[in-house]
Image (cartoon, rainbow, N blue to C red; front, side, top):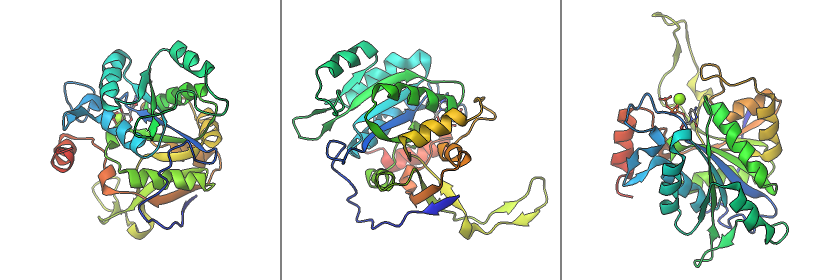
Length: 287
Ligand code: CTP
Ligand code: MG
């Protein structure tokens, strides 16, 4: 079941990072391991550049600007170093790590109850911790790989799952998702109303009309309490590209969790085709 979260959207959201978030530590999994077949570029989609920066770097920045302090980026196995390098540049006051030993070393000196890798930057905000791991055959498998990497951060209570392909999701929208999970909703999706008329037409003839007022377009990041997401993925059937879930909230619904909506945003458009990329460059190319 999907319900809408009532909230007063003053656009400010929670800008306190996850240092002062009442124990609801927020981490994100950014899936960026797809090949981008429909885009047809000469590099994997997440490495395609807009405004001089790869899509995956825009995605991570959007999350860190929203106060997310820990991000696992799931990348194509043969591109891990390239992705790490582009993120180190984009998140220049943060820490991009690949080797778990680095993380354990950092953790050993940390205060209990604080994300070990989290430090304050000179500007006084959260210095993000970013880890890059290899993805799987399907999006679902890639999310599972990212979730497994979060085992290193047991304090994490809220997990966002985000598509690198929706890298221009605005921080105000990301904060709406975080706030709804913090408020106690176990599974939250950003959703938009449908502008077009919709029909059911499995062949050439129209079989039925659909009441579009009841329908919503689903975006990412989707937010979950950590245990809900872990339970949902544990119960999901094995992922093959053709049968895997394209959406994590669907897996949460399958284990009985109510899925809640918050208002999405046109800027969180998914870059799928060359036309989408042209639109993104026109809208966000000046960044
Ligand atoms: N994704 C992933 N691992 C996969 C497949 C997809 O991490 N095995 C990620 C993509 O990198 C993307 C998001 O899931 O950020 C949404 O997938 P989609 O837009 O379909 O990207 P691609 O699968 O790369 O594109 P295509 O289907 O056109 O090949
Ligand atoms: Mg795909």
